Length: 40
Image (tube, rainbow, N blue to C red; front, side):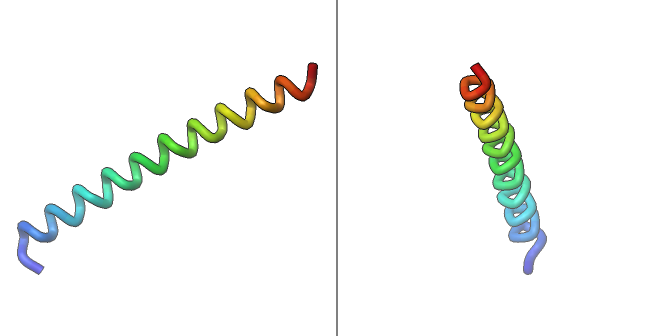
């Protein structure tokens, strides 16, 4: 792998991991909201 390819690979993995982290946070928020609704 050339240095350019390495940089591109690192950037894409960082972006995808950031996206999954955001998705997980959103899912946790939704599930907690659902739990609140079920409690009432």
